[in-house]
Length: 260
Picture (tube, rainbow, N blue to C red):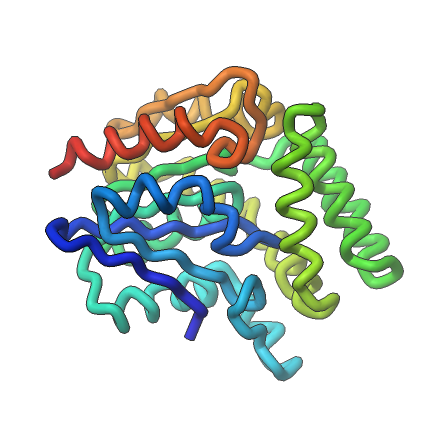
């Protein structure tokens, strides 16, 4: 089972589950925990092979590394904790996992908050993936990861986010990085399916105005979803919860509070 941490509220029955992105860990939510636990029950997860969660030990597991497989890990934890329904908050690739969970288990999802949401891979990101495929077995994975973080978060005010993700990614093993990288080949098909389906679960997209790779596609997506809304935070890049935590916390807590 995944490593997880819970913060229980003495009065509230509302659960909020945080899902980090690839290469990160539950520690990226350190600017959220204090404020959210004041009002809700909080669940923090380390995805498989990240943070304190163990990776698969045998090569036989490599073929099982799919978005469904990792999504089932999350379901296993909330089942274990007997959480019937939760609000889900994700960042970057974590938003893809949340969206996949909502597709498979819509009855478990009250709402989705998608920070730095990935809806479509633009040409720059596709070229980066091709480049990474050519060299992923030849160079240390952290070199590739640094390159990815710099392309996604290029500005000087994104530095804190870049350093945080690189620091957490250093805890991965090379083989674990390759397993997750291989999952990237599935993402375009999955995102295409998501874009074609209005899942009708309340969704708040929280995007940085400087999230150059992903913001344009999210703007288009919001117009096609009947229950979606978009908050754009200016002077902010991909990792909105780290770069603008006060605004992120304020708006997201208010959004979740409206359901209670």
